[in-house]
Length: 188
Image (cartoon, rainbow, N blue to C red; front, side, top):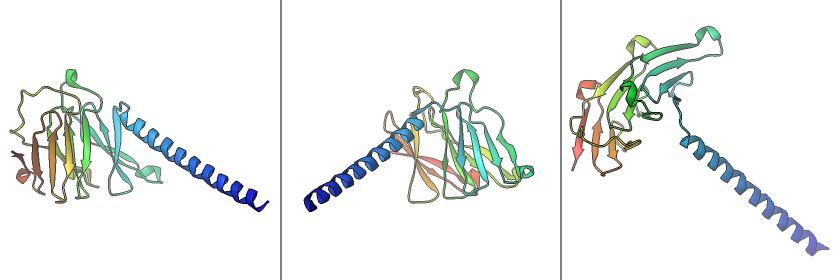
């Protein structure tokens, strides 16, 4: 009888472990599937729990979202109201945001042509801005391919690497609090 109880306990433990693994696999599959879907609009969290950035991934247009339990404190403010591409060049998931170590700064990347904008948001909307980082080093003749470019953070809070996933070229992005001092340097 004791043998049967021990065997039953072992079998129940194995079933429990198997069920847990299946649940984790299903959750991973769901999150991966969600990332692969076409998304025209995305919401990006900021370090402040009451603020988010809503972005149109086709155009690069962004809005600062402020919400609160009190409806009178909810607000949607445009950060940049103009499209960053022509109508015929709009593609879902073309633009994405990368947070930086600076609470108020994000990098906006055009994943097709490698253009980058520095976006600073603020609780006072008049202090927000979206400004392009000059990148004369990326060839204008490159073929426009979806998701060609990606940004990668470095251990330096003010530096990123921009990678062209097609030809392997990459650039160092050096950010500055003064946007005119931010720079993009090719790495050979």
